[in-house]
Image (cartoon, rainbow, N blue to C red; front, side, top):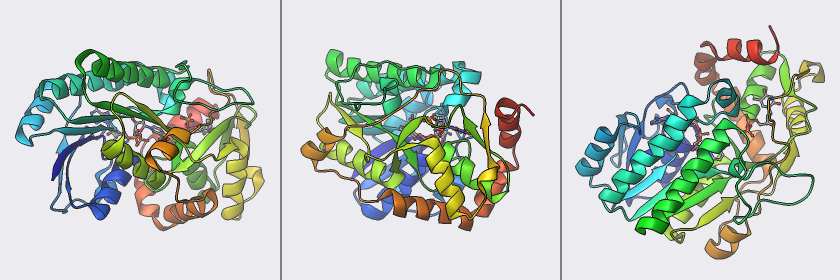
Length: 337
Ligand code: NAD
Ligand code: TYD
């Protein structure tokens, strides 16, 4: 049995990871440490909350005393760090909390893990640390880091720190860098859930700039299958890119969602561009495919259909969220209302 400290497990990717992994494996005991920020939601974990191999702890990864206590209490030798502030637009509006959680918080986890002599520390990172691509080329693990937003620069800082702990102390650290995820439980500030929910409510769909920025989309379960594989078999000190080779301009995704929901293109509204908006991300995942034998299981067509259906069937989940302040925030920032 492995006692694994999973941080940020009440967010989008972390909760999907926990729900998936508790069904797949009986040799993991998961301690989920999550601060429950606006993005953390225990409703995401209803199917896991009573599982015998699962505990939830509400708390901040920046709290060194708490983190140390949990390592001691649960004899933690394994860490998967999902916890982060994750939204680029929010990082543009105010960056401090991004550096606090993503850099300082990761430092607290790494320092504690070093003292407790962990056997594996997986840092969940993003392709955004590589910066923006032109029309050609792909990010490989040796592409130099060139982050452009406060969010991506904070993630790059954490990546460098994690690798420095490997080089300096020989800590068993491994990194994953994944492209844009979609799937159930994604907070409706990110492109795909925002567009689904706005379409369902016949609200305008704010497209930044010319709508031709490209992202490389992967279904969240494929990302989590890759994380589990890297966690088990990835070589320490290494970085593994994760992507499903599914590049798409934003406007195409939006049109697809409108078609699926049989809504009119007239909902589309071009709005002012995001500051410093990265033009294109695209991942080369040859390394994880050849070295660890991972490949995506889901096609975009089936997984986007499944995702749209999930939002249709889980109105209560997102209605509670959008009754908060998030729509107001978007309307003010991007629609000038
Ligand atoms: P999310 O914003 O949905 O969830 C983040 C979770 O972390 C929330 O539950 C939140 O409460 C928790 N959290 C935030 N600050 C915390 C703190 N100080 N202490 C403890 N918990 C805290 O994010 P996500 O989309 O699930 O992303 C998870 C990880 O994956 C992040 O590290 C992100 O950088 C990375 N990632 C995301 C994507 C994507 O497309 N969403 C792609 C690649 C990598
Ligand atoms: P997002 O989901 O915020 O992910 P990231 O910026 O981390 O890639 O945005 C994905 C793309 O969609 C990005 O190019 C910005 C664009 N976008 C819009 O055009 N309108 C929106 O309302 C949002 C949230 C994003």
